[in-house]
Structures are given as structure tokens and as C-alpha cells.
Image 1 (tube, helix red, strand yellow):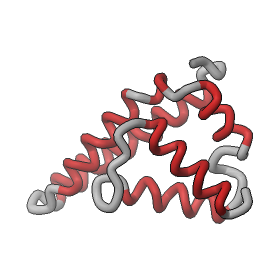
Image 2: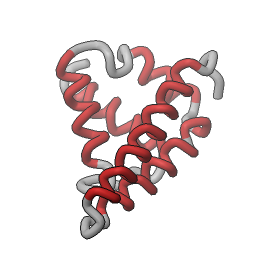
Image 3: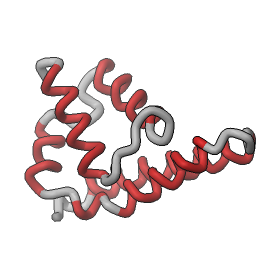
Image 4: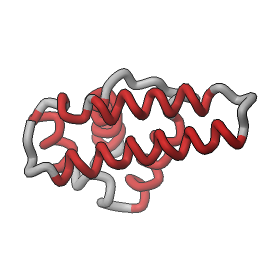
Length: 108
């Protein structure tokens, strides 16, 4: 899949940043194993961004991505926060499809 690289690279960077942040939290709270679980999940998501089918990534992009309103940003942040705690998407495609479904259900 190729979208010029910008959208993919941005998404991959987001997942990598989240993984690193979770590793820092794991050091801060070593008794809470969920942070390492989340870091591992974000590593997996970052590694699977390139496998998102073109049509799925285009649907995500057509919705305006995450930056198309406060509610979207809040929901995106909530979805990121939930990884490893309340959700366990196997792939970046799963994560993006969940965001698209949520946005569509809200009439996006």
C-alpha cells in the first residue's frame, strides 16, 4: 500500500511514540504489567501499518483522519489509551477499522 507515505508514516510514528511512552510508564509503575503489554501491542501495530489495505486507509483518510474535529481527537486519544488495557487490536488495520466504524456510527 502506498499513500505517498505521509499518512502511513504518521500513523506508524504515532504507534511507535505510544509504545515508547508505555515503556516509560512501565518503568514508573513496574508492578502494573499492562504498560508493557500495551507497549508490545503498539510495537505490533506499528509493524503492521504497511499491511493496511489501500481501501481501508483511503476510507480512513476520506473521513478526514483524526484531525477533523474535537470529538474525533478525543475518541482517537481514548482508543490509544485503551490499547493494552481495554482493547487488544491485533493489527493496525483492526485499529483503523475500529476508528472508522466508530466515526461512521456517529454519522461521520
